[in-house]
Length: 71
Image 1: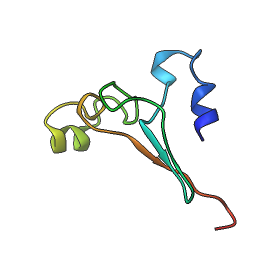
Image 2: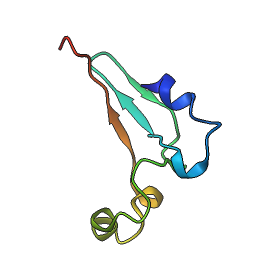
Image 3: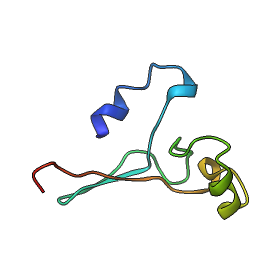
């Protein structure tokens, strides 16, 4: 999952996706410091914005849960 996101650095901004932290059954990888913005929510998502009173990308931490098909 981390490799997928690393390979999206050269695409248009409106297609970019990212997360701060990736977690699986063995480790946790911090890709983007939680003090920086990660594009983990659709911009202007109404429900998320109601929860946080701001755009969720600006104020929430993105955690990507990774799994394997054999689990």
